[in-house]
Every structure is written in structure tokens, then in C-alpha cells.
Image 1 (cartoon, rainbow, N blue to C red):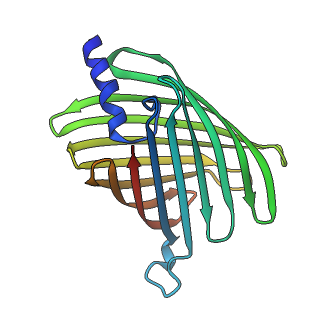
Image 2 (image 1 turned 120 degrees about the horizontal axis):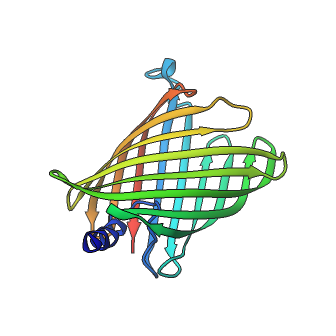
Length: 226
């Protein structure tokens, strides 16, 4: 059992997906994506897309146990969030379970209001094997406190991934959250990442709001690991 857990812990960082697993010391994972989205009633209309949402994510293995990074997003209305974070595993369970705590600080702007932001979260992950290839399941959670307005936002992303070949990764992500002044949302994001060269992937996906979000979108992204 210990040998299987060790093998999975060595394998999962090569899947180039953020989560509870520590990034190998000295290694970098970088992703950038853009999602064009609109409410369902506007799909196919001349005004599509109504919004372009861009995201940037960076992880660096500072030590064998500590991963640091930057999580940032921006839309075409000028709203943005930029958050520096640190994550550390807090334990490993049987059958490949990994647990981690994280914390971060940054800034966010909505409309004309810019304010500081602090975050605390818990991540979990587990690797597994299937007849179609190696897979992983991860849960990333976070509570975000905006110091200017003194309110809280919550997010949770559950990801199921499968690596059917050395060059292909299939992912299905369920995104949920609650932001101050808005409805709780539930969103489904299926995607595929294709390796174009060693350490580089392109990602294609869809985003569909299921509750509290009526938008549909298409996503294009890139991953780099070095």
C-alpha cells in the first residue's frame, strides 16, 4: 500500500493540475485561459459574447512541502482579482488521499471599488487507477474576506480528471460559490488538455451555468510546466 501511495504522489504532479499535491521543489506550473460567455438567450445573437473572462495561475515549488503561487483573473469590464498564496500538505491518508491547507492575500476591484483581500482554504486530492488510464479527484475550497467592505465570499471546485494517454487529459469540474450581493452559483466545466510538446498543453472546454448562473461559454487555455 505504501508503495502505491508513493507512486501516485510521484505521478500526480506530472498531471500539471493544481490541487492538494505539493509542487516539486524548483518546478513551475503556469496556466492562462480566456473564456467567452453569454447568457443562454443571447447565444447566436450578434452581441455574442457578452463577456470575456481571463485567468492566470502560477505555482512554484518553494520547498518539497511548500508551494507558493499567484491566482489572478480579469474581465473586459475592468474587474479583477490578484491573490498570492502559499499551500502546505497537512497529511496523507490511506489509498492516496492528500490534504493541504492554504492561505493568501491580494487585491480585488469591482466597479470603481478596490480593496484588499485575504483567503484561507482547504484542499483534498486522491489519485486512482482505471482501465482507461490514471485518474485523480480533487477538491479546492476557499473563504475570501474583503477587508474594505468586511464581507465573505466562498468557493469550491471539485475536479475529476483522467489521463487516457500520455498526451491527453480529460477533466470535468463542478464549480460552486457564493459572492456578496449575488446568488449562489453552480457551474459545470468539461475540458480536454492536449500535449503539444513536452511540458506544454492546450486546453479546450465549455462552461455551463446550472444554478444562479444562466451563462454558457467556451474556454481556451494553455498550460506550461518546467
